[in-house]
Length: 632
Image 1 (cartoon, helix red, strand yellow):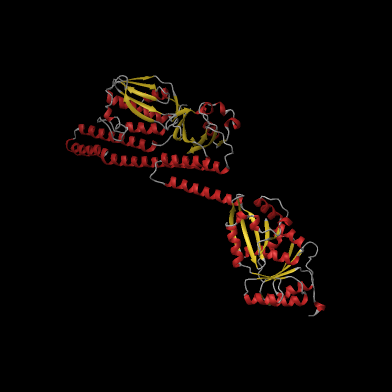
Image 2: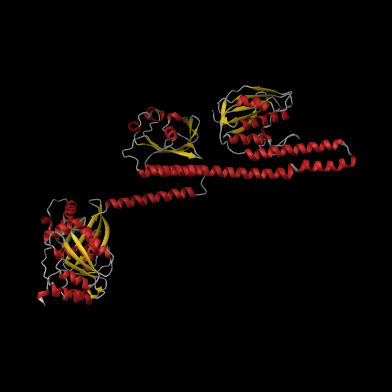
C-alpha cells in the first residue's frame, strides 16, 4: 500500500461535528436531511467515486456512506480505493443493489457496515446508529443517541441491556417501577426487569425479529402504563437495537377522529333517510347530540312572539312535551336568539349569574346549556339546544360546539327546503286550479255569449246584448280573481304596521253595500301589507253581502288572545260540513260568485304568516277568524 498517499483516521471526530460523505448518484436529500435532524452530523454529497475519493484525500471525512451502483464504478471498488488511502476510515455500504456475494466481498474489503436501504424510513435510524458507533467514542455515542430519538436501548443475544439513552431509562424505570441509573440497568435481562412484557406483542415482535433476523415495526399498548408506543427493532448477530416513542396522544387523536367520523356517518344516515319525518329526524339528531355531549336533555324550539314553543324535545322525566309553551324571557335560549350566536355555558351560575335568576334555573334546575340559533330565510326561527341539571366539570370542546352548530345548520337548511317544497307544491296546485277555471268556468260564460250573439244577429233584440254583457263581466271578474291569486299568493316582503280598523273602513268604502251595516270594534295593529289586508276584508264583506243579504250587519273585532281579528255577520251562517270546502278554488253557492273570494282570503292570511278559519258568530251567522298575525 502506498503510505505516502494514505490518509489514516482515528475514531474520534474533529471538533464536535461528524463529517459524513454520502456517495449516491441520486440527488434526493432524504438521507442527508435525516442525518441533519439526528445529531451533530455534517453531510457532504458526492455523485460519483472520483468526487468521493477527492474528499477522502483532503482528510475532511469522518465516515463514508455509499451506494453500490455508481456512475464510474461500484461502492465495493470505492471501498477498496479508500482502504488503500485511509485504512481506518469508517465505510458503510447502504444500498439496495446488492446480494450475499456483494455483502461477502464487502466484509472481505473490511467494510464497517452493510445495510439495505429498503424500507428507507425504517432503515435510516439504523444507518445513523451504525455511523455513530463507527465514528464516536462511547460518551459521544450517548449524546447523539439521546438527541436522535425519543427512546433507544440495545440488547445482546442474552436479552441483556447493553445501552439505554436517558429517555429509554425513564420509560423502562417507570414501567418496572424502579429508579435506576443507566449503568444500573446495563447487564440486566429485559424479561427479568419487566416480566409482565412476556407474552405481549412486544415480546413476540422482539423474539421474532431476533429469530428471523428481520427488521420489525409495530405499534402496541403497554397496558400497565396505559401508554401506546411506536417501535422499530433492528436485529443483528450481536443483539437487538430498539427505537421507540410514546404515541399515546397521537393514538388518542386517531381514535377521536374515528369516533367523530362514526358520529358524522350516523348523522348522515339520519338526514338522508327518506322514510323518516322531519320530527323523527330531529329526534334522532338530538339523541346523537345527547350521547356526544353527555346531557340528559335536548330540544328544537321555535319562537312565537314572546313565547317559546317546544317543537321536538327529549326529556327523560317527561315533564316537557312537544307543543309546550314557556315565556321566552325565562329561558336561556332567549339570549341565543337575541345575539344570534351559539350560547355556551358549562356552569350557568358561574358563567352567567344573571341567567341563574330565570325560571329555567330557579324552577327547572337547568345548570349547563349549549344551544345555537336556527335561522330560516334570514330570520331566527328558534334554537337547537342541549342542557342538563348538573354543571359540567369540563368545558365543551370545540368539536362539541361545532357539532351542535352543524346540527342547527342542518335544521335551518331543512326548514328552508321544506318551505320551498311547500311553496312549489302550492304553486303547482295553483296552476292546476287556474287550468281548471280556464277550461271550465271561463268556457261557460263564453259559450253563453257566443250563443246570444247568434240569436241577437237574427232577432236584433237588446235583451240578448244585456246577457252578453253579463257574461263578459263575469269573465272579467273571474280573470281579476285568478290574477289576484297568481300574483299575490306569496309572503309579504316588507311588512309595516297596519291598523285593522282603518283598513276595514277603507275596504267598506269600495263594497256595494248601501243597505248593509259595518261595525268596527278593533284598534289592534299588525305587521303586514295594508293593500292586501284591505283586499282580504273586501272579499269577506262581499261574501257576507252575497250570502247573508243586502241588509246584513257585519262586525270586525279582535280575537281574545290578541294575535288576530275576526269578521262576523248575522246571516244564515255556513253549515259545519261545508266549512272545510269554502276556501277551495271555484267553490261558490251563488250564481254571482266566482268561488275565488275566500280562496284569496286564505292566500292573503298565509302570506302574512297566519291562517283563517270559519265558525258560528254570536248572531248565528258566519264568523271568519284570521289568526297568528304578528303584533306590531
